[in-house]
Image (cartoon, rainbow, N blue to C red; front, top):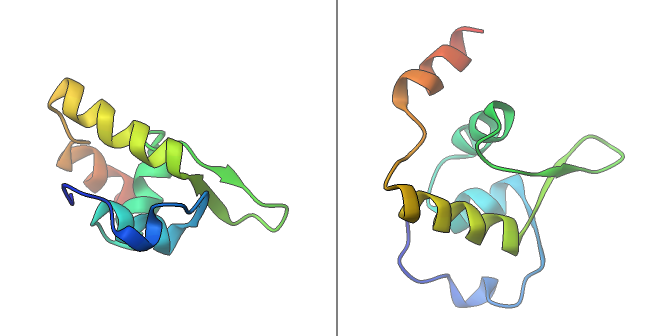
Length: 82
């Protein structure tokens, strides 16, 4: 995960899944898995697309730092087989 946010994201309020992936330094598939598993909160547009606030993304990063954990690889593997 990047230690400092990208300056282009500094004032951005709403992120698409792709933008959230870039912001967190992970793949789009990882964002989808984390959201589906409930690790990363998101809201859905009327069309069903995921959207994230900067506050949600920063809160997620903070929670990882507080707990010292990341979503477990085994959890992510089981989501793929579901």
